[in-house]
Image (cartoon, rainbow, N blue to C red; front, top):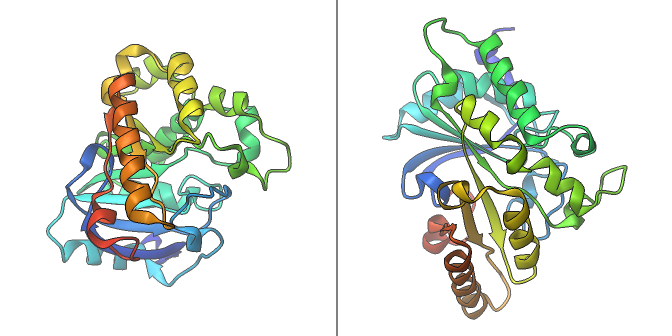
Length: 270
């Protein structure tokens, strides 16, 4: 089958503003894949957890992107790295990275059971190899245009559907930057960590930053993004944003707003 015409596991795609992280404020085209093995209580895209196989092909997505004035494509989810999405992710990232900057928003988890045996670096290393193997152009290194927005999930209930019980130390080790940050620099991985902040998650995030992130990476590679609350939203969200900002000042890390939510709320396709 022609790769460009294969049906992809894409729930929706749309043109908007990247509201988070390093490319905050950048006009971007979003491609949202379905299926996620984790169950985060704060997830604002729960409709993606099990939905898949919408009738979108790589060619139709590419043509949709070309209709807009943007040079940045965001592949998000769901969980793009998840084993049922992974092969399609490699194809999409390789294809779009020839002409666009591509950000992959991910936990980096291929399979929740895998975090006992592998690390994030192992999965990124495999991804780079697979991108190079799949490359459509010999004179283009697609990895030069691929960025990773990595969102570690430190809330243990997110792993509730795993066959084996996951503990926080296992999650910490999977994302341990003290172990493999130098390797990631060697391979020129363009990445940052983005944590969803709430008062309930503050201690877990702080513990991770203190023990598993080298000081030299705190300023440029770590973002704190306040959780968006739906109940008593105005007052609660303002308070949480203020707390997240104070946390960033205390820890020396970067604050990430959610511009798209501030403008359009949680409307789909925005």
